[in-house]
Image (cartoon, rainbow, N blue to C red):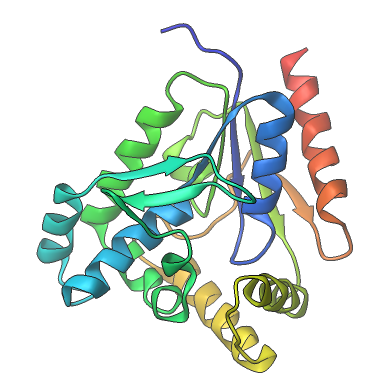
Amino acid sequence: MEKQGLQVAIDGPASAGKSTVAKIVAQRFHYIYCDTGAMYRAITWKVLQAGVGLTDEAAVKALLDQITIRFEPGTPEQKVFVDDTEVTLAIRQPDVTNSVSAVSALPAVRAELTERQRQIADAGGIVMDGRDIGSTVLPHAQVKIFLVASVDERAQRRLKDNAAKGIDTPLATLKHEIEERDRKDSTRKVSPLTQAADAIRLDTTSMSIEQVADKIAEIIQKKES
């Protein structure tokens, strides 16, 4: 299959702005957007619904093998489905947020979802965000970005995002959750959060979403020319 457009990998810790920026960039270049974090959240939601142990790798993988995770266009954000059940808001609730790291660390889960993500990206013209896209999922991506921001800034962003979704979580709790998520993601044995050697690092602490999108767009345009 002839590739149409580039593979763009955007990585970084929780609430660094990856998904928001990735959506904007994908729209600008008419690329597909793949939210890999939502895929991990979706299987985590299913695990919680089924009452399966978060670290029971065989049981979690068996659940994953039985479900389809898919995306549909939506306003203001694309919709996420597990089979025929929409889980767009459910996967952003605190129970999923606080459990997704454990499920994401399971080697069998990462292997299966990595394969699904590579299949989605194979034709090119895709923006994919996550924590190990440039380092593991799409190691040959033509554009690799690693977004970072201070914990305080990321907690403020999540507070705002949660409020828009009707989720009320104290700022101090969000800061603790982000610090703990950083620790878990950076120290897991399989595909830990890490900056790929050839990724461009952008500190977004003092940048607006549009400024970050503009910077990434410049990088893509240079690669395309």
